Length: 98
Image (cartoon, rainbow, N blue to C red; front, side, top):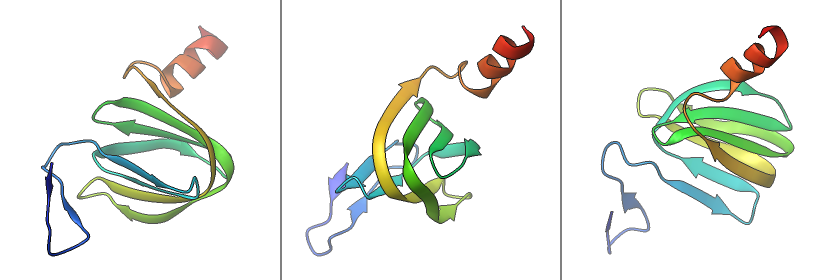
C-alpha cells in the first residue's frame, strides 16, 4: 500500500481488502463483493478475503459503492469475525433444512 504524503488519503491497489475502524463507531471496507444480510445489530458481508460478520448496535450503511466494492458503516461496533467463503447464509439454511 502506498501512502500519499500531500493528502490524508491512501492509494489502495485494486483488489486489496482493507478495513479501517475509527473509535469503534465508523468502519470503512474495500473489496466488498456482496452484503448477504444486515440489520441494526449484524452485517454479513462477502469480501475478497472471505465472509466478514460484524456485530454491534445501531449499525447502518453510510456509504456504498457497489462498482468499487466500498462500504462505510456507522454505529457501535462490538465484534468482527472472518469465516471461510463457504460459511454464512448457506450454512445457516443448511442447519435449518439440512
